[in-house]
Length: 343
Ligand code: KG4
Ligand code: ZN
Image (cartoon, rainbow, N blue to C red; front, side):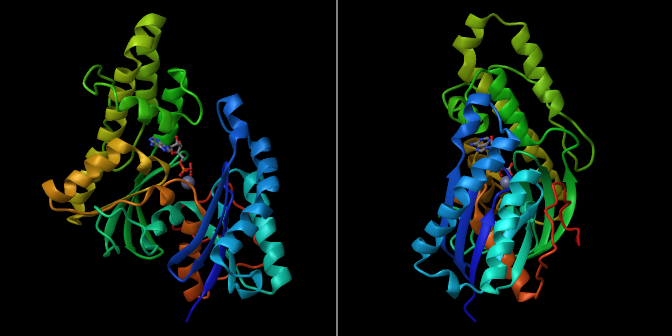
């Protein structure tokens, strides 16, 4: 049965709208918000206002690029959480109004589940990656707000193995970039700079937590103390080396835990998801596991790493199959744990 879905993502600072025909993405429009750059981070109130300005044009463009009208839609999906409450309210209110006006069902989606579910989009993966995930696999979900190790038993079937106790990996990259005076958004900037640096130049204290949880605040503090001891000239000259060494420490920490989870569970299939899965070093290292360790590795295309509505759409598709619809009284959830049902 062909299912046309419109999905809306507005959890943080990207307004995105996508149209899917079953697992195939017909359009995936992302309007990023430049307004935050001057403040060096996302300003929630400005994010909400910017979503308001972008949402109608983004949805219009998504429908136009998919070459369908809104009347052909079978369902409207939106990000219910986790995220910034004001931002979520814009997307959810828009989705609810549209569903009401068109008399179409509504589906509420968990953003962190959606990052993982992006692996079920047709043609989600880069050509060198394994495709069409076979279950079970272990997903390392690394974004600006979360760092999670998740056992994926199938679409919408998740078991949280571990997560960060403090800063998320993306947050660590963003904070480190800020300390280095790099422009917002810091993670991709630090990644770019690290490409020309020596990852063995400096040593930062890598967190060593027992079990499956992560911690990145100590690593960030280690960079802060290191920088406080240097002169501005030294920092300027060695910036690429500092970025490369810091990036190595974060990625190495993530990879060690992921490999431990593989060994512990015997599941030799891994996926990466979320904004930090766009990181060049992480992608390169994971890809090596395919040839060197013989693991199955799932690496998403860049468009499906950072926030996008297509991942909300694919999650909604599986909820649609289960008749898992949301009511008009559904409200956004700023905090929402993966795998837990909410009302
Ligand atoms: O998933 P995402 O787009 O939004 C959230 O759900 O948080 O992730 C954004 C995070 C930011 O912290 C950003 O700096 C980080 O992903 N990020 C990167 C890279 N691209 C995005 N971090 C390191 N290297 C990158 N290339
Ligand atoms: Zn995200």
